[in-house]
Image (cartoon, rainbow, N blue to C red; front, side):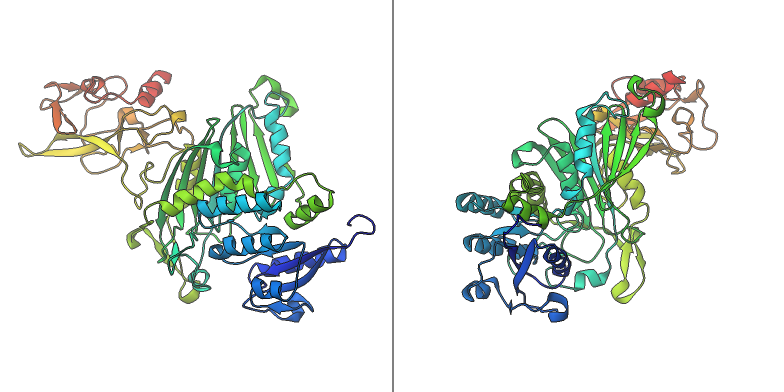
Length: 531
């Protein structure tokens, strides 16, 4: 309830249909408690009095203003490209604003809106609903006491995973859906900036990246399998000024419908997973840590309540709450991500040969096989789809290849690529490594950054790397002679031949590869020693 004797906060809703219907339901709840009163609506589509109640409806906010409405709060629930202009007009009316996410379509618009709110002394709450979860303060307490019983240590990294699907009907519902630009106006309606924007914003919040200046490094990888302009399968790779890596692996081409997205919080002594749409937090401490002995080290699941963002805005206005839960200024880091998406090259189209089309008509949607595995590895490594070798992503940077003599004189067969390692996260000791090692028969025998060993850059796939038969049937076993003609390592424009007799070492790598021409990847040397 509002303070005794005070009138309910007056609200004007811009955008009565679509997500606006959720706001109407919430306003009915707040009206029943005496906290809010919907006085008017502004919308091109009117759902009717049975949905919005007996209120005047105007086509535009300007018409509502000219009709004399002066609400305490304006809710903007309209397409992304209209947010800046409507929010500015609401501020000029003297109202505080609840602005749907993302707040604006460009970083410049964001700064303009921020300046206007400061100049006019008004509040803007951004509709990142997940920031109302009471799980977030609980996470802050968990990380603030890294060595308390049941803790997960100090924060090491944060990752966001979203595996949703969208059908053709989703993109057919509005002209701006799935667009980057519409009639010269910025829209930026991609998976990162709209459908799964909460995943990115929540991960940034947990990592402490809220203001624009909290972002030190930022990169994106944008792709799409739908026939749209914007991205639907992407990664975000970010590092905060405090050195915390934040990675998001997101898709709208998953095999399941609306699987709850999650944010993984990696600590030095365990991890936690926040299912932010369900306000559920799963904590898995490292039981070997001294402070997690006994019951303290057992995994636990906690469920939380959530504060409503409109109600929080009203409570701040009336003095019942100290601060906004999702203030515009704390969307600065997210807007840096949006700007990176907006200014990046257009998303790459994923070829039909890498996609399975499911259903037909409006229900038709693409599914990317194994996207769940690639997303999991991208977040945990952390890495990108390209770096992990996803067949539908751009090839990773290489500096050369490894070739073995062919059956005919003068011919050579490439059996591995030499990766630069420049795209490997600092947390995984970036270094050059051999990638896509295969037999003469074309059988791939290596893998990169598997989930259980993300620091491994050329680890065995299906068989032990140090015993993998490089020359196919009849290949030498470790310690035996591999041949007399030698292997060729090509790096850039130069090629170096190994000694005339190539012998495998105990690790299974030819002894000639231990030199500077083709060194044994560090991860494989470590694995050999640990056996």
